[in-house]
Length: 534
Image (cartoon, rainbow, N blue to C red):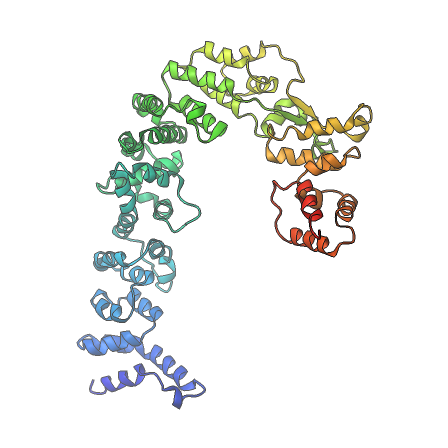
């Protein structure tokens, strides 16, 4: 023992660089230190100074390995933190021993949100060398969840921030994956056996209940766990906020989503859900164009939520009337990529199939859902059917979820078969038209009535048509003309626009190297090039 201080001093002292030009001496010292460390640490139990010297000379990985085996304990934290900040693997190694879990959990305050997740994520890596790796202790998981849920619990408790807290729990933040709400859900998702105890916690149990109702599949929640989450099902935090209108709309959206996610809620607390939905519509007034900031998609979501949890016939009637006033679809058939091939099914070109393929069936789908609500007056649904597109009526009639009385009412309505349908013609078919250019122009005029990907296909069809005119080409997207059109067309247009002016070709090259905005038309690009060199 008398030689122990001298041995530790020799092993822990780095070799001076002036005496070790090639670094071989320092490498030998580190190898000897690593081999001697497991034998030296037990001999320093009665000598805190020597033990601290060994810890200071050890690398973080060596400290973690010794903490995992119990050689380094929480009694050595003073020496460890004297020269290092607390890191996740240290807590992981210390918490493997039951008598140290509480002290290890106290170190969580030194970590950020992302490091808190790493405490659990790296559990297997830290204890890989142990033959029987210990399981993650429940108190450690609870302590980490407590730390992550604290900001969300504070937001829910304050009227000024309750709305923001609910939105963060429901939507997360994909742009910043290190946010507390995203990490908290990933930890909960990895430890489903502790959901019931976490949901019952007096401090952050409400946050856990909101998380489970928003993100957990309903088959993962047994009856006991779902019953524990019932107090949070209707978002009571949003009844008294500093933004009552926005909070009421968000509350209706969250209640509708949760009722669809967990249909058992409609059996367990139907009256509570209906009352909350009615109150949310009364406060938020979402069934008006002027009160919707999300346009038609926002109105459709509101109607879908009300159809799921609403019970007021007057509100459901108002929703049905609003649904009938929404703009109808404009179907486009005969697109280039829908041309029949050897494996093409002609049934896919039926209007009601195109309606669903182009995601234009949302209005009909919302009407089916609101018709399925027993509280909706059938007369309101029947009146709304008269305002629908013929393809929507066919879709409703063939939808398996449509109530029988609604399907019969849709089938009884006569409608012209070609109403609201634009058919893309081939050049051979356009030859029979007196003014093919006007037909192409009518296709381009559908821009505000169809989805972006459908309009892209229309532009491709116009670009490949022999009947295109310079005036029509100027209306097309510059991206389409330069990248998707036939090469001779783009080359001829660029030769005409740039001519023999080097400055114009340089401008064109700069435009091609920079991403072209979708709103930039070929006419705007040609004008920009033509003004170069003047």
